[in-house]
Image (cartoon, rainbow, N blue to C red; front, side, top):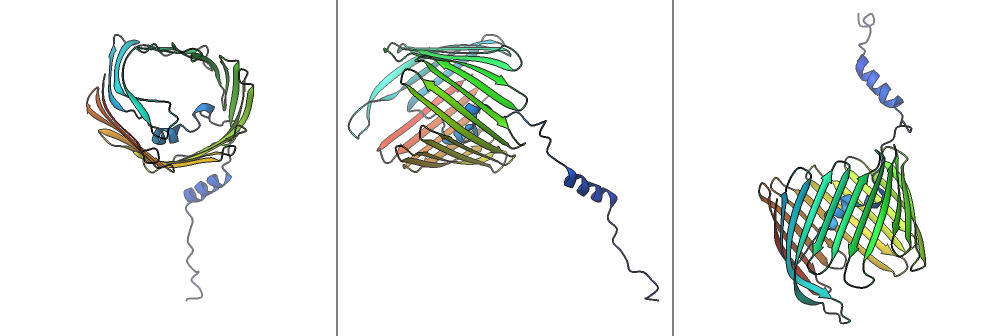
Length: 313
């Protein structure tokens, strides 16, 4: 009887076989690649963790919306300011500033202006000429001679690429282009010419991004080599590291940092190879009320910066 009964066989479900066959035959559609991020924002995930906007002293920001598009802002900053010195020690003098701002935000137009009591005027304009073409302008006017500057940017967003053309005072011209070559990899390059200083440059960049990590690399003939890596541990925790090297001056800097988002606060910080440690805390006390703590310790320069602030509105 054992010879008559056929051996048992394991049947493969039809849906499992079809799924495996589909994954095996799935190919990348290179005619339908995603649009990359702007060239100037290649390292934005790493900068969020490694370059928080630290400050020293007291800072108070208040903003009031007059309607859905127009709002006013008031800022008070009190703290020491570093002055240039030939000695190794950092020299600071106490200062205080008041800043008044006006904002107009529309889906196709954004106008932002800031004026400070020390005589500085900052203005930003962003307008969408078409669905793909955007013009941006930044300007800063100061009382100091030869310190005012302005910049115009023309950004074009394609289906799977972005390009930008820049013009600035001092005969500054620049252009960059970034292209998606796979669903996760994008490559780009840039050129610039500074007529006032008679300098030109060319650079290349690469960015690889998935749901869990972002890796970027950038190199230019000005001597800069910049590498960064961000690991998304979870939706609330990110770890970042970067490496900066100037092969002309032989300067090297490496840093590691973190970005931790809790229910009521956000904590960011980093430490670099020069012995500089930074921490930045944003605590939400109530709806429209945030408390900020900032700290930076530079052991090599023996410089310590601590600040706290409130943001209302």
